[in-house]
Image (cartoon, rainbow, N blue to C red):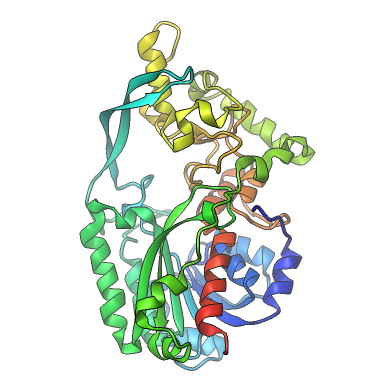
Length: 423
């Protein structure tokens, strides 16, 4: 179930120092919080966006930090700053950005329509034109990323390089589930082969799995691929067969999923939260999407909407427009991913761009707006008193980019209990 906690709880858990971690692509600290909740000590982080580092240090000010491009970081730099020798680090963690794999990234192209049967809000079965994104398979193309023209599709290989140089006891690499889709098969195999072949110098048994954060205490249906490797001598010491690494590394799913009601319903009575909510409502009224958004039902019962199974609200708006084009606005492509999820389901996946105030991709269950920072923090399972820096949109972007701490805690707990804990 959903658990609320504070930064003090994080500190107390991390002070146990059950294992140590170096985190690459650390962002604002989502994965780090998960490791800390599992009893891990973060020895060092690397992150190239200063605003992300500022957020991280606002919450964990004593953390050793390398601010800069991971391509310029050497294994010897990490070992010197942590005081460790090759092979002594417990976990090397990283979430390399890879927009070419993302369903909201710049590599995605036009929308491809197809017909699909589904129930409308009156319970009638209708045929609706649903638009799915079609991917362009242009990898490693130079694009504008974070204010700089560059390619960042190859950064997983930099993590491979550092695994070889540092040889940690285990490594964890997280990325979007699009990495495993058919269109990305060749590129994904290239990454997997690099992880399986090039780091055989350290004799690692690796595995990967798509995990849904909603099955690990997060009120958000957030599917991500996690790749994990355990060094062979550590696996043997733990008396585990290499055939069992996959089942031992990844946590079992929890059938009880936290919902939007569990996570944010009480914030309707939170004065500070509702002040920001009003700002978002007022801002949305100035956008062309507002007219369309008002038509969408609120406080939706789970059993009365196909949104419950993850389809786009665009389809419902298109159905209304076709039935009565005079009184209903024609939906635009920019409306495609906007969805309003019922209270008694997990939120759909929060993203960096989707949380932006101008887009309103993630619609509040009751109001014509997106989520506030406090609501987004809850849906990402951040500490209640977690601090964010920057403008409203910069704060929301930080949250959308994070690994959900509670999900990472579950993974870290498993790795520690199965492989790192002294028997």
